[in-house]
Image 1 (cartoon, rainbow, N blue to C red):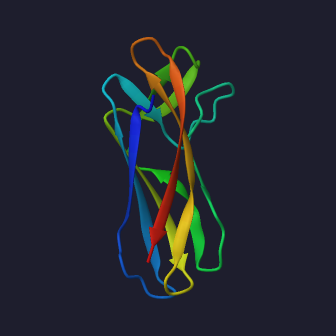
Image 2: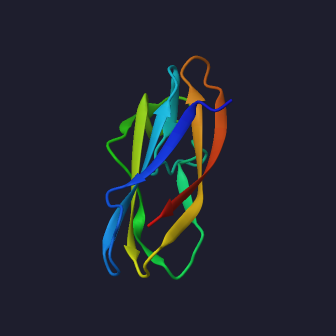
Length: 131
């Protein structure tokens, strides 16, 4: 079961050395499901999405993975405010290019839960960007 399907794009296709670009992670979320954002810090609480990057000398991370306009509300089950997406989710990560022909790879881990009965699924995806 995989209620969220990710695509990976960037705002530039041929960056120059020293240039900062934005990696874009977009999820299409199945009907009746939600995907949690980056800033859920309740303990216990839903697992926030996270990206781990395979380090190499071709790029440098600038800041952290950012959720773009998630919904927020008080969740009775988690007993606190949570951030999530329904339908579509968008996340961005800025990187500085340090070498030509840069390859940026890694994994994302996230949690989706059904709106029907609250059942949750942990998702994992690999990503790869080549410039």
